[in-house]
Length: 550
Image (tube, rainbow, N blue to C red; front, side, top):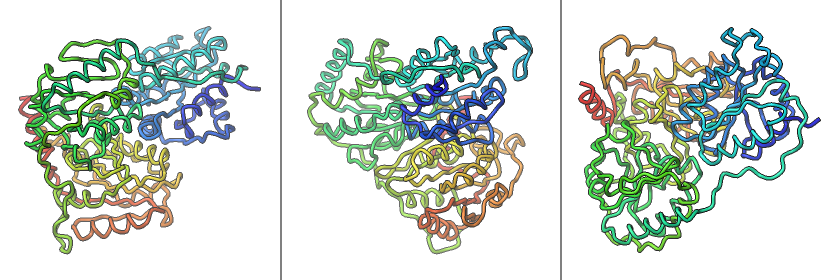
């Protein structure tokens, strides 16, 4: 018998999803049986629901949609932090909650995983603030509600929530008719806006395009690339949005970070007479605590949730078709100069000696280590601020979480992204403090035979926080783990992984060389660094945060 559960799984397959993450619970087990029986889907069980949400987020950033399944109450609340991060950064994740039978809910029985008050809508209401759409499925409304919610996911590229009672999942249904679609045609308001943008470019003497993370949410990287190649317009990104444009292009001027930018980049962007912001959010940690020097009077900003033209905000526009239409504008190719951006690669100094590693030499080595086509993932700590100023190579994908900034996110996210794209070598840099939050997924990485290269930066605690406040306070300390031994503890063997602990430049280079030459195993490299050593970018940002909060 074809059921509502089958209908939902077929719709997920239509989104390009081939793996589903989560944790089993007694309210979702029958639905998990359907996943196991579906020839188009694979179940990837996680150590906990929060990690499942993180892994789904990483998968969706690479595959453009993801799904996870948890049980009612305890499971969904554990995942909610991860769902909130996906909402903040426009990542399309479908959260499916297995809930008690409809009769149990209708009669308000006091069952487990509830608050003991007979009310079953508490947790769904909690999710309304961090999802673009929610639905409580019934036998009568399920197909229509599933389609409504999934179409909203495509239109907004934000998470959505489906509450699926046990009996509803087992109820009969007809197979889907028609396709899901989030694409909206251009309206007359959209056409008028495009004409205004075209006129603005024709009048501007020093225009700049700033490409943001929302472009990646919709898979619009090729559309913005086409625009820049056609017009040769100067283009930049914030670190939130890094990787959406080919950073080897002549017209890519570097990453903009407000007062923390390279001076030539900062001056060029701040003095632009037209700034076209595409899917950009100007948050504190990526603008040098709001130190951007340009005025909204020179800014046209297109975002998923609205448009701002020289400070005037409207919301009756459609992001995806607008971005796709930009490349068709009649814009005279840019003839001006670009700011000096120096070398786009850094030579690693001291390659033949036993000098102790520093943040500076480590990031020089990493810059040389990265190759075209890699997927780079940087934790929101010294790692993110170390990679932010670097120029990425062609075909490189970058994953970070500077807006939501939930520490530990990147380890499961890296694994989810590699499952979504196993052909790209995934390279994760994560600090010891962040890793301790989500290290459980190392078991999943080994079970699934994943082969990322993971650099664990052991700098004895929360160095990113020490740069902001409390350098010697015990709240920035963490327990010291034997990080090199973790793959052994989580069930690995020499066929599945290779682990190193490195303290010198020479040791780091040797580990890197072997890791790059061997894509068949997971490489786990513990990098020993001084507690207060930090990338220059982070040191400057820490001072700005301290000044702002004093």
